[in-house]
Length: 171
Image (cartoon, rainbow, N blue to C red):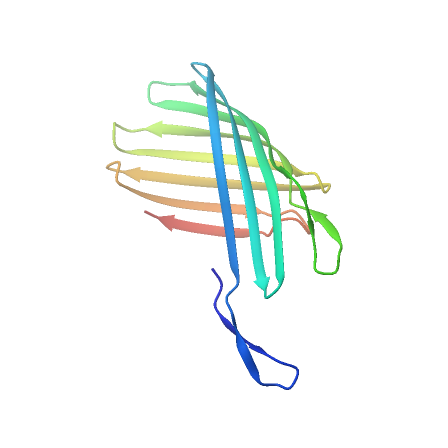
């Protein structure tokens, strides 16, 4: 949710306030095809109300196939292939239409369990955005006592599609 701001009429007098809002509603389902292979679908509806009388909405879908393979006694390799954020067009306030940033993704990683409650994971992904741009990301996570984790990540954005940013988290 955005921070409220004041609205003014053409005379310069305060006429009210507006609080921008965004909402994402989603539902998903998965199916285990084989012991090491699954497929999933996520459906979502997104809305954005940045100003009074201005509202945007879009539908999107993710379709993916995921695999997990035991590569050592305590290690697993993971892989993913899918299409993400396939969806409807958004109409801007000026009437121009543009699409949400849909992509084809290939991802992989390694998960290592030190024991039942402590683990690390390293993941990487590459995205080809249907707007003819490429993006990539890497991430790592350490889990402690199965109750706390530390994460770091870096996303190399695609020009005019997604931003470049780093992230750090704990939980």
